Image (cartoon, rainbow, N blue to C red):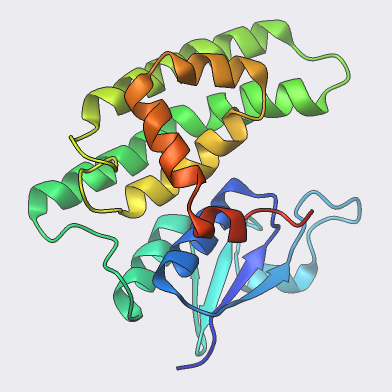
Length: 208
């Protein structure tokens, strides 16, 4: 099989999710930079890879995909390496539930409403940040309630749920409010410390 290619920006949470999966599987891959926030706009050629101009997109031996969960599932099933999905139906359902919860309720609040607002705005919207922290608290409380006993979110097996959560929370803890809130959930804090120390997390991060 040929080397897979990821299209997107290395600062993107969702690009990093895909890269984490590839790193954990031990797969050599290429990263084609696509900056959807560039002043000149999204490159016209990229719409052949993603009709909505979002990132990431993915290609492997002529097979193209977009949508992070679809890409992550394909990589796990199409390549050798450690399995990143539970085999039992309940484990699979829990993994999908965690991923869906993160997408629907955690990503926007943690990344955009708190971290990006605090880090990148000259005059941050404090009301937006406060609302984001409230939503983030609920998301972390829910994640803590769903976490199984063991080192990872679903127990003893590292899964796509862990690799989905890590970049979102990694962005959130770039700011002091995120660090303080996470510290109030000791099991999730311990999980975060564990996954942030993995070689795959360092290898998938933005270039210095």
